[in-house]
Every structure is written in structure tokens, then in C-alpha cells.
Image 1 (cartoon, helix red, strand yellow):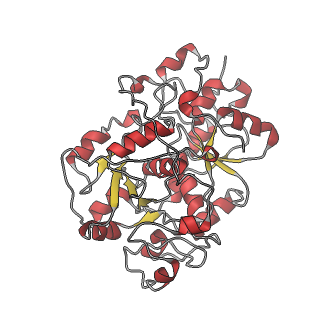
Image 2 (cartoon, helix red, strand yellow):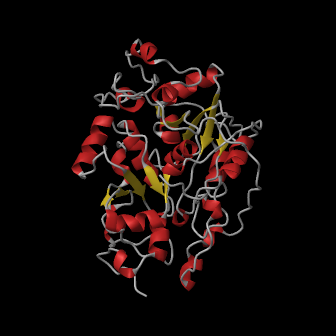
Image 3 (cartoon, one colour):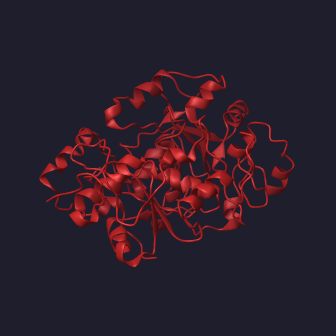
Length: 391
């Protein structure tokens, strides 16, 4: 595949005069200084033996088989052989069918995290909470009021391409490496991400995907997020985090990202399946978008799977079996190329996570998502049952 340029290197594009309304809440963000970072040894083609390996306390596939008592908290590597992940077995769900190769565990439970923290495992927790502006929630303030002990706060808006007119686009590799290094993440760190959303998981999958896009495979999602952590009675800390800086090297894997041009070309080529993770009303164009100046609707040929469809009522990830049925019901073929989109590239990552749990680790994200598409596409390429787009 032809490499795509780093988002930070994209040239500004002519925009509608009303576009300045879209990014009002981006104003005032400090920029991240550039850093010279050599290529990461982790940025390589996906290889079964590489994905199977990981830092302590990971179990090998054979060791994991010996832990099938499935106490809540065990979290083996995902593989077709084990046919299970932390979420479905811990929730008493039936195991799903995995890919033939082993993948690094995508989910860990609250019990597993609590135990690992007591045992001083090489673990770094990152709170990736982010909310739509209309909710008027301050994730950083909420973090300081209560977070999982040892966690640091990851600001999705701050660690982004500050030159882009679109919100929280991927930063370049040097910027990402500098930012996460200051949070105490090194290339040998097992990162566990979570958020404090009411759904149990909202923005954390975005950070899970970002680490993987920059070559760091040893990253997991806390199943159920802070909501489930508190429900299970585990303690919280307060105040600002004071992480010890580490060295992190990053290289962007361009296959993880799709551009406006890629999606535009796909309207004619039909080479990619594109799934939109927004709620049905926004997808159909009958419910308003949360950003001023953006009308609802969808890209021609896209399918709709709201991100909440991947979650149980308790906020946990559904089992791979349930997720596979969901994809099948929506006519998504996991053996073919798949791209996920949403409003601004956040909840799209739930689609990537769900596919990963089914053994498909190569789902790309259309980073500009609906906001970019609406601003740049021709009116006839904005499909809506409502107002749509007019010149």
C-alpha cells in the first residue's frame, strides 16, 4: 500500500467560511514541540510470534490454557486456540472464534489490574476520557477528583495534529513519542487504557488504536472502564499525576489510517467496507450532529453499527461470538478490508476493537471522519434523509 503522509504534514485546504464554528473548542490548546525520534523496532508487519510475545505478567498460550478456571481477572492472550478473551469469559459468555494466530490481549479486567498494581507489574494506566462539548464535562478535572491509582491523564485533544482544522487528528510520530514518554510510557511498557464514561467505554478505544497505529502492540483496554472499576469496589486516587518520564520511540503504520482521498476513491472502486459508528439518527440524517455547522448524514455506501452495539448493558465488551453475529447481521465480511468512521475518529475505534476481538487486527480508521467529509464532499456525496448539504 502506498504510504500516506503524516497528518501533521497535510497542507491546509480551502474551507467553507462557516467552518470556523466547527473547531471553536480547539482554541487555546498548547502545541507539542517536535522531537527527533528514531524508528521504532515495534513498527513492523504483523507477525504471529511478535504478537504472541509481551511483557510480564503475560502468559504464553500453553500457560493460559492452564488457567481456564476463568476467575474474573484472568486475561490470556487472544488466539483461535484458546477461543476466549477476558470480557466474554469473565462475564460468563460463550467463547468466540478467534484468528488462527495469537494477538496481544485487547482486554483486561478490573480484578487483573488491581492484582497487577499490588504486584508492582510493569504496567502503565492511562485515563483517555474525552467528551463531546455539548456534555460540558471536564475530563481532566474529573481525573484529578478521582482516578485509578497510578494512572496518568492522556489528553486526546492535546496529543493531536495542532495544524489540522479538524479535531484530534493523529499527531506525527515524534509528537506522539514525546507526549507518551512524558506520561511514563516506554517501548517495553504494557499500557492499559480506560475512560470514565457512563457507557463503560467511549474514548479509550481511540487511544488503544493510537498506540497500535504507532507500533506499540502491548496495549490493552480496561474492560468496563472506570465505571466497572468503581462498581467492583476498587479504590481511587485524587490529585495530579506525577509520572516519571520514559523514552518512547514511534513509527506510524500508514495502513492504520485512511484519508479523505481514500474514502472518496472508494465510492467508485468499492474496495473497502466502511462502517460508521455513530448513532442511527445521525447516520440517517434525522438527528442533529453535536458540532455547530455540521449536518448529519453519511458517506455513500457506508454501513451503520453504533458503537454502543459492541457493549453490554454493564458497559463490558460483548463476546467475540456476539460481535461476529453483529458484523454478519450488518453484512460486514471480516475477511475483506474494513475501515471505520464516526463523527471525529473516536468511537470508530470501537469497530476496530470489536474486529480485533474476532481476530481481525487490520481495521483502518478514517481519521477525518464525518466532520471532514461533510466539509469537503460534494452535496451529492452527503447522504441524508434530512437537510443534507447545500452549497
